[in-house]
Length: 50
Image (cartoon, rainbow, N blue to C red; front, side, top):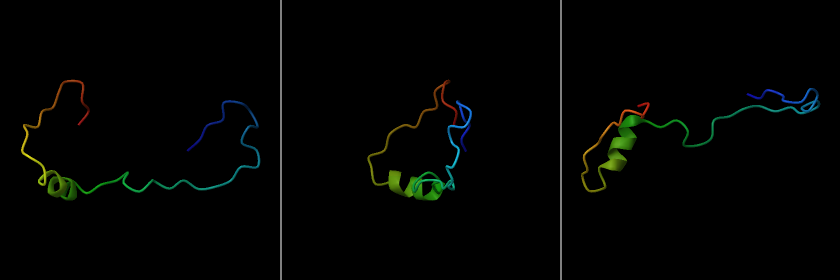
């Protein structure tokens, strides 16, 4: 997932993209992890995406 900014810069470069570990998480696992901490009010502020 790369776009050259200078023509020919990536000539001869090969490879594959792989999402890093921890990039995708299971919502149920997040809730389980969060349960180990003292309860706090969850807020969604206007500028947050999710």
